[in-house]
Image (tube, rainbow, N blue to C red; front, top):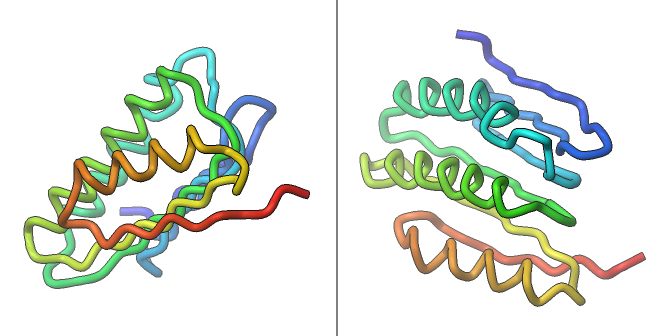
Length: 130
């Protein structure tokens, strides 16, 4: 298994930096690809395969998205669901959800994820707008 999945950001897709060896996964930028399923397919497959190798381990996901569309919402939910499965299996899973301090919608989505996946150590962190 490759120890890293890196996809640079584009105008409509986030930077994906999943360093599996370091157990640190991050998504940054904006997510409104023409096909969210197409963009996230390999990300989800590789993440699921990585998580299946964990045994009493820890992993951290950092999500710092300024914007995402409704089809990306489903893919993010699927990603966090995979992490929740790993947490239920006895792994320590942490998720840092960064949101613009002025963006209540992003904050609320993060809070909904925290409620839906209580096995994950979830932190919402506000970022001041530039």
